[in-house]
Picture 1 (cartoon, rainbow, N blue to C red):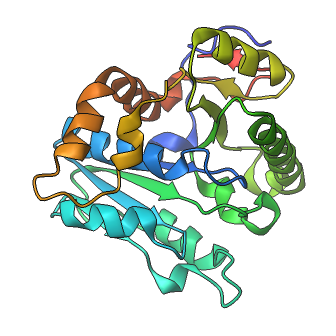
Picture 2 (picture 1 turned 90 degrees about the horizontal axis):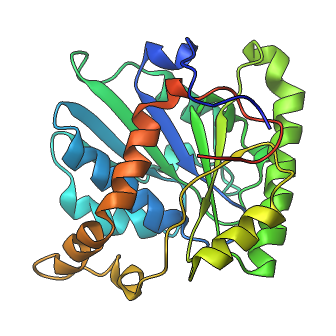
Length: 256
């Protein structure tokens, strides 16, 4: 375990906005729901910022559901240019997009990626250009197994590429999702105790998550989701906006 993670660091992250990705090779762990909560939370809490949700899933669940909220500050993308013919991410185009100047230079920009199931770090070098990789997981054995495997693959990517990026690697934050109780959260934390990453606050299961992507006339489902999870969304968005207050990834799991 490292020293307190709250010592501010001066890194290259401050040169532009923030880029976050919700990623795990396992499906059904809540990547799209968390990307929805993050992007809408950022857009509503940061009125002087630009927010861009980029859906890297060819099924376009996030982008199809959220494009109705798009405006001059909130952009939703599902662009064929970001994919190769195989369906894998087009790393070059994604990196160019991340590194491009914000559309409005007087405002801060946030980019939120929603990645599909089956997306492996070895084929996704663009991950190294993100500021933080959020890895959602539930407490089920299958999800824990897949999450450990994904985290190992991330470390292998970091080790292969870190010299090319001046040893700067993204922060990795595990997001316990679909949790039923504090005991389950503690069980998950113990199962991942040796992982070199941060672990965030638990998001407890609610039936509202099942309705998150429905296009209702009054968007009451989305409003209810955001309202009932306001404290969590506040923590999630604050974590992204204040990344510079975190040290590099710890040697073992560190509770935020």
